[in-house]
Length: 283
Image (cartoon, rainbow, N blue to C red):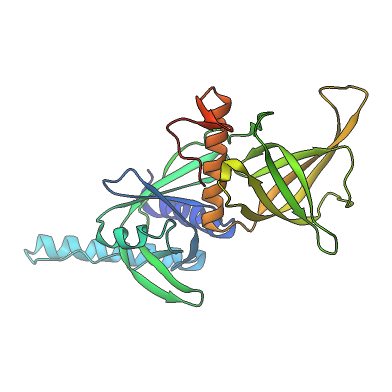
């Protein structure tokens, strides 16, 4: 962890990227295993105020040393800066976080994972409702991000998406593979023309979801031609979709769905209809 002006510049740059990219935060309350989801909303500090804050901090430290050398007592002032994040999902975390002395937040940017420890301050009223104010991170622990899971859907698992393109009737196709950031599907022919860059609405449906579909938006990012695994004479189109505009709850649902499918594909025992034993499938 870096300290000083250079370290704080890095912290500020990381936080600004997290706000701009609307990354999903993994929030853990000290002493608990359960994790919650949220997104950063805003910061109390911008790039222009960083140098001023650093200068004020140096003056404050100098004044504190002078007081200590002269025998005067001094109290350390709380850092006035803050970060603001959306309410937690699941919502029970919004009560638990108020009683916590330490809050661990983590998120991914590019190929790196960032973690830091902050404290709960208060609930703020914002235009969208309420938000949680946390203390300013002193620094970040940086590690290599684990490779994002992309799992192929087993042949006996009926997991589909209903695709909605503006101005056209929706259609349903089976999912070929899925990751926390997107999915792909194949088809020999679609009732609707899709092109790279098209925005679509998606409803992920299947028995594994126990009757609760995941409704999200996506962008068609790639269209390639592949051969059918059962008949090489048959050509199919493979459509790649990147998820966009996910709510915190939906993003967490997709993560849990991917983890569940990965458990099944790695040989998890099943209790019927593609369900592994001892693991809840509802997402």
